[in-house]
Image 1 (tube, helix red, strand yellow):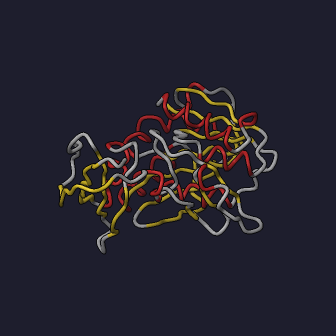
Image 2 (cartoon, rainbow, N blue to C red):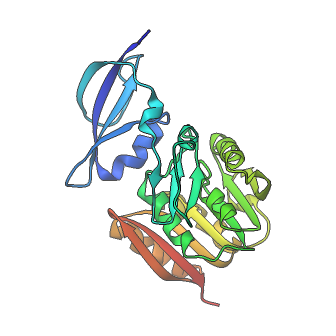
Length: 265
């Protein structure tokens, strides 16, 4: 028996995609990527129009479709692929790539967004074997699981969202690395000691508040993502300079930036 549901099409500006993830935690379909970098997304609901801060383009009645069909393997780089659990049997990895099995859920971080992809790109460049890694704002645990699979001896994943902590645990189990990842609800200030690599995929307004808690945890390398457009990048680089850190690499995708930094000392 099929269920008739509504399909709502919204227009989302490029800078609003993070907000879309927050408003539609159960997922949405990216129907179109516009020339200006914005998106047309589709949200499916059997309970009426969802509350959203975006212009509604159209609504239509459609036959029920399994939401899982919108989550397919995502190649986030030449060496890293994110695969939902129900696609594992059908996915044939090529040699040498890291496969992350991630269950889409309510926590932000399915690998679709540029900020996650840029974080992974910088992490790929690090030799993580035998290293310790702190993942601040772990979301669904993608970065923590990547670090564990790439040989890190100790990974600590922290997030202020209890849903994120729970989903990181679940995804770590799916990937067989739960014994290597310690999860903690809270921020960097709740973690003791320093780490060889600290990665933080946050937003500029959050960095303004918590960067002071993150930098003392960096033993060697800091990787920061979630910076939108040049103005936010410049502001963040000034913040880093104030803490005695200097950038060694900046990467960009669709006006989103990520930074690799080391201490001046």
